[in-house]
Image (cartoon, rainbow, N blue to C red; front, side, top):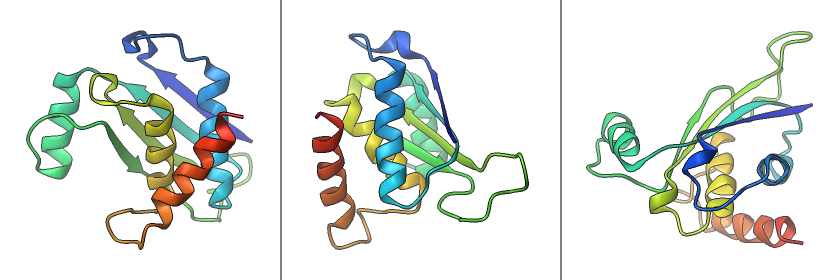
Length: 135
């Protein structure tokens, strides 16, 4: 079972239903072979994203999305009855042109995908998931 918690949705310009966040996360995770676990999606302001970006990536200013994986794509659950902790996706709506795409992007990073080191596979998969998620 997949559990998605959403925090800070009041920062969004328009409503984003919980089911849509869950669907986008589920599509991204299923494409990586992960069908259960827990993750959190948090929407933050520019000031908080600037802090996180500086602290974790040593970069100045805010960014659109950051991911903090925990168990990632590890197929071994931590134990009977304990959901796998996938990690957190943090999104700054003020610096994101498409919140849905940021959700998918961050979720793919949680399971170990990296567009900076692959040959375009992650971004191609992201585009395909967005087509699925919008249908």
